[in-house]
Image (tube, rainbow, N blue to C red; front, side):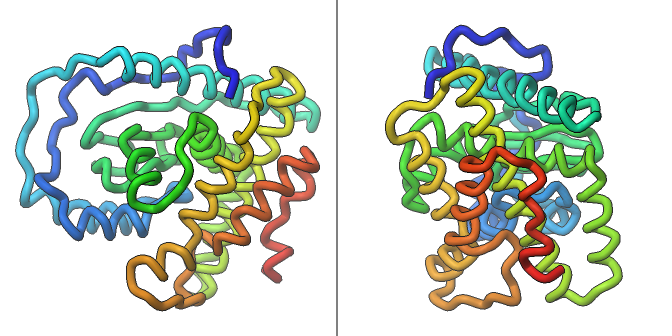
Length: 286
């Protein structure tokens, strides 16, 4: 991905050089379970936070600042550049549809972080909190995504994840997330899961739309970038995760969509660049 030469956004908070507060020791299987449940969360982390609070019984305090390495600094610059591109692209798309895009914040942290949605550990993976309209990321997640879940490495895999989480911010601004939460409260667990899948697939679609626009505006793509994004989407499909962790697939428990669905909706967004073609709810009969 070509990301150099961008302006610097004032909407990124880099907390990696300060204490992460309470940090789980080891994390163990609970940490892995949290990661699997919450990968690319739609923003409602209340249930996950209940599980995460269990980790607090086995935590220690960190108080020493951590110096950023040259690689850490470069990664931060890349994330900032991606954030800037999401700001420019979504500002343009919203304006074309007679709306005003409100910038979210993106927070980089290590180990643990306090959010308006509750305390979170790095094991939860990247997530968006609608209460403070911030995306939270511990970049060690991407090493985990590659080594544990078999996704290809590369900077565009990171761009895809960021664009997905920004997609949840778009859903918040458009009122989609609030409508989904209301419907989830009215239905049963299976129906709530289906709504969650539709929400996540739409965020994948929005990530594709962002890629489409950003390529037109900034010529960001290099050979293999789209494959990196598709590999990441494939690695975190519900069916792939369930096969890896429990050996069986239970469709009614899906909350994010299958690998095939996640790749399909990202590709559809990328190929069409048309935000109006992202009605994943209608596609799933909702």
